[in-house]
Length: 388
Image 1 (tube, rainbow, N blue to C red):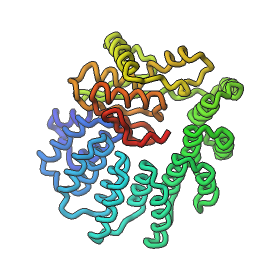
Image 2: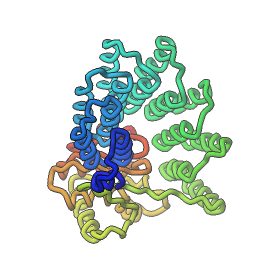
Image 3: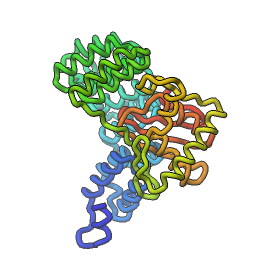
Image 4: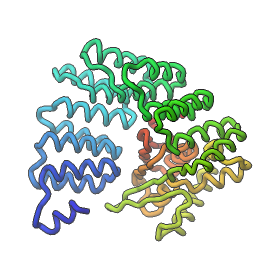
């Protein structure tokens, strides 16, 4: 808004620093249309040759799931530095192109550019996103032995995510215990998320204990533990944990999904009735649900954390925030339009399956960015390889 005001008022026009900051804002919001507008302004003002702006644009387009435009900017940089290469490697990684990220790293080395900490964060993230366990462990060793870069908490976090998603939970736990830097809350939450995926509630309880020791436990951590208990049908533990949360007055953060259309960001929460087109959105979502069920979609009821029967669970899952955002996108855009949704929490298994079916039945490319990664849906498939 401030960027627009500066342009329109003409008193203090945005300079290259302003543009750098606004592209970062667009990256955080997943606001592609506004980011493209900022990019046009950068070209018009003659800032297009500034390498720091180009590096920021690579990151912005990558985080909006628009990798082709990120690559166009990358190709246009005359003298690419380590930040340029690292931004492109990270962009490939977060969009599910792990092998391409590794190839880009090899090309970077051939050009004589020396990798830094951020380069290896991108590489390890690429391995995590694509399940390349052996390659990831090799890069972890290579960075210290060959380049003298000691792994930091972000590198170890990627490795824990990689091992956790591959089901190697005890090995991931040993990595955290044995690493030379002090574990933080984020790395423990990464392992807790893997425990949720694989239903490992005993290790999940140990992880919660470590978070309590750090005095860093949050409501979301207990929600993950609730997920683990409910997915294994341990309703007694669910009841005990709910009672604990109530006694301690711990309130969970509601899931919120946003979608940008025509430069305006629309936000939704679960069972949202605040949108001016709420009736049309709910009708469209009901229509989509009917079409997807015909195609074979069945609600994944393990995503519901209450002890209800199957039908009640399916109904409770029907109006999650990302489903409302997707229904709104289908409602107001032309057939075939790519829909981009950003969510503040991790997408649940049921919404992930819902998006897969929607992409196939409605012939839509969907890009959902949650708090952990990008999920690209096309023709009934997801680029994240369904590591759930």
